[in-house]
Length: 285
Image (cartoon, rainbow, N blue to C red; front, side):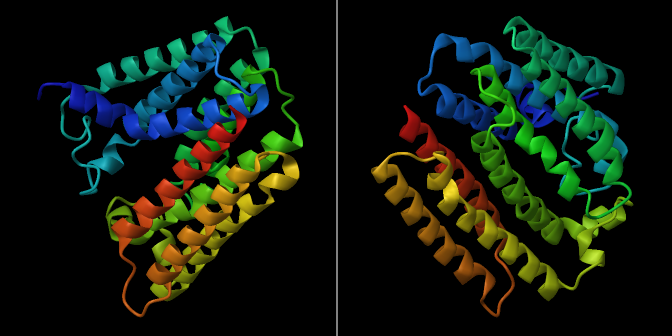
C-alpha cells in the first residue's frame, strides 16, 4: 500500500471544495449578524469538518466506481494509498467531530441540519446517482445546507426569506456546475456503470441546457437587493457589474460554433460563485 500523505488527505476530503462550502456558511452567518466574531469558529469549523467527512465517506462508498474512471483513479482508495477500513474510520471520525462542534455551539437546529446534510448526501444522493442521470437536481439540496447552518448558527430563523433566497441561488448554481463535469466526463461515467446525462441529450441540447442554467445563476442575484441580501449601493453596483461581465464571458463560450472550452467554463462558474459571496460578505461587514 502506498504512503498516505498530506496531499492524499487533501484529495480524500476534497479540501478546496470543503473550503468553498465553509465560505458559504460564513457568508450566511455574516449576512445575519453583520460581523465576524469568535462564536463563528465552532459552526464554521463544524461545517468544514462535515464537508470533509462527507466527501471522504462518499469516496469510500464509490471506491469501485472511482477505480474505473480516469478522472478519479488517482484518489486515495483506488490508488491504494489507504485501506477501506481506515478510510471508513477516518471519514466517520471527521463527521463526528463536525457534529460535536455544532452540538457544542448549542444551536440545535444547526446540528439537525448537519445530520440531515450527511444523510441526504451520503445515503440519498450517492445512491440515487447510480439510478438516474438527474440525481443532481435533488442532490443540489446538499449544497444549500451550509447556508442554513451558518444562518441559524448566528441566530437566524430557518424559514426567513433572506436565507431561503440565498440558498436557492446556491441550488441553481450547482446544477450547471455538475452538468459541466458530466459533459466533459460522461464517457467515463458510462464505463463505470453510472448513468450520464450525455446519454439522454445530444451534445448541442446539453450545451443549451447548461447555458440556460448558467444564465439563471447569473441573473438571479439581480433580485438580491429586494430581499436585503445586498444592502449597500456600491455592493449593488459591484454585483451588477460582476453579473454583466460573467454573462458576457459565458455567452462567448457557449454561443460559438466550436466546442465548449470545459476548463474556461468550469473555472468561470466557480469564480462567479466565489465573487458573489465575497461581495455579500463585504457588504454586511
